[in-house]
Length: 198
Image (cartoon, rainbow, N blue to C red; front, side):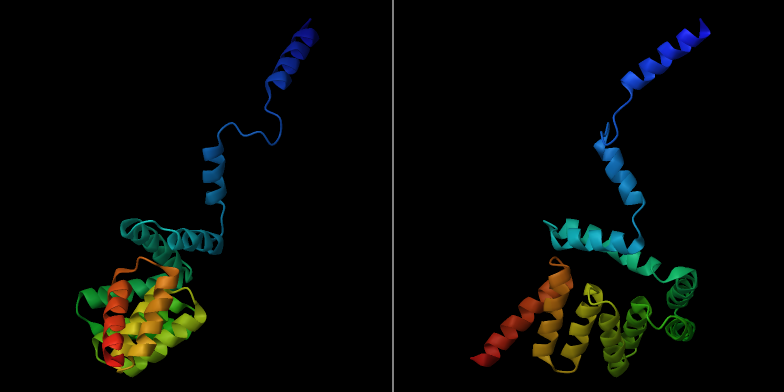
């Protein structure tokens, strides 16, 4: 009797089971797949979404996610040094920030974020030569760093190289078509260069 009841329940469970490959809730499967992406896969996915963003607000939201992924890619030590530098900057202690960035560049020379942060500090100090070198290094390490290209454009403008600056802004916009500073700078430089051509 017990065996027949067990057989009945087993047959019922098997009859009601969802065949393999059939998804009851596709949205849950997509979310679960996203949860198991590597950082690099997530970055690729977000950059593709950024390139296809339909508005500036959508683009900036995705760009913030991309920046967060880039920051995470350096690991715990890099994150600690970036935090230390940011605290220094918040307290107007640029010496501490510079020491943290130098240490970061020495420990993680292939971490583009460290070079970009160092370049920003150099730009604020008027050290345009170092900024140019650091940003060139950053885009060599990660050619999709739209933020580095936008800063590189600014640096090249400072060096009175408007054509090169325009090319840098174009690269920023190739990755992030809605980048507000790069869009404004491109329009301004296009007008400037068109006026020079006349």
